[in-house]
Image 1 (cartoon, rainbow over the protein chains, first blue to last red):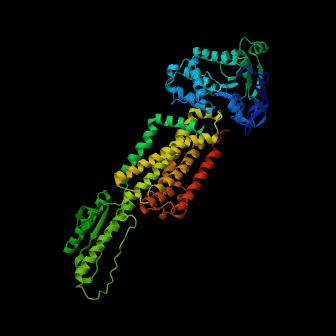
Image 2 (image 1 turned 90 degrees about the vertical axis):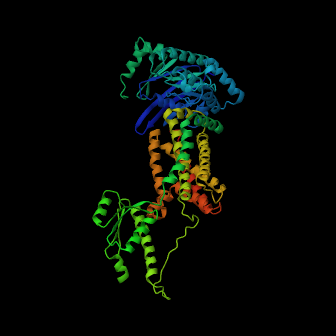
Length: 247
Length: 370
């Protein structure tokens, strides 16, 4: 893996009319990094993520993701990233297998390559004997893990996770983070938004957004030192207290 | 790519028994029930007769009125007020009053009056009741005139009789008229409503967002989504043809090639409506309400139950803007008149414009990137 930044933004901005949802954010994320994106509701996390994943056109600034320009090459970006949204995004009325086949197919996996990827995935999740079951019948934790794996089926170098562990029990959350670590060890960059401050501790680097701006960005340890805080919770609280935007 | 989407859609459609039920059973039930129930011909109008004359002529007239199946005698009295009461109570729809000296006047003065009064709350019933009564009285008039005039050689009174001949539908069979129209509406339902609901449900569940971050292109998604519904629409119309034949014995005079060609084109236009609708609304509830509104207009303005020709100019203009109006017109002319592809070529052009415009608008509106 090259040492070049996989995400690189400079003054990236998105306004909706008079409202500036994301205000001149600049940062870099390196390969294999778990980049945590924190912020209160309405701070602009999801908007920033949508711009980076090619879903939303930025208003101004520059950004490149996996080496492609977000303004001109959004289709290329889409081919090379994985994305798991806040809302559970597999098809409930399709079986595990059918979901994998569908999303794999969309990412251009065909025939034996698809079969192999599917086998690997099912084995890793120990879902072999559930592969013919409807996704709707799986427990939420399983769904989330499956959803993450499906987002990674085309082996992207960068994965966006938008609040991936919302509503999931602590054990599953832990298993989920183990999967994230495993992926990061294989050189995949993880860009994750979360509300859970204990999860922020797991990240290599964390950026905290307040009112559309990046208020602080560093490793969790450095941030705690900088703010003289015991844990990330306190860091977040100190920063987010000044926020003007409510929910 | 498109194949993958189509496969997924079919899997989902076949897994949801409600959609299949709606698409297959609904046409069957509607096609069997509605044409029998919705009939323009009104029979069994409740008639109250006030016979104040009680002569042989008046008796004959009463018999003549009651003889057909148009009228049903609910009351016979000599007092207008009783008859009026039964109208007020809703027992009778029409009062025919035969005055005193009816027979005497006919013989002596060669003319007599009969009064007809109708309960016009139901305007159609009142109008038709009046018409039927007039026809029967007219026949009666002709009869007695023949009897009274002792057949002079030169009949000074020119007797004009009208002959109504219904071309193409000689027996004025309402099924022949209704069934193709109902078929048209069914196809519209399948095409517009079900496809909208399908797309909007992906919006609701959030799966569309997931699709949007994949490399799947806008046109691939749309074609993949709409193709299954196009196919289902064609199947549903085929079921309709089978029922039309089995239940009503209706066969298309113009053959089925032109119908299938035109229906295929029409379905494209209707799917365009569905797609366009799905870009405006966010929930299935909104979609349902909106398509309900659309369907109401389709039903009332398309010429299915009401004659487009008798609408005011602006309404005819509106009617022309609705694809179902054209479809109903064309499918009737193929079925009943036996029009061929060449005969309806201009209609193909019009429908093609609808398809292009509606789908174009929908695609413009369907923004993958907000």
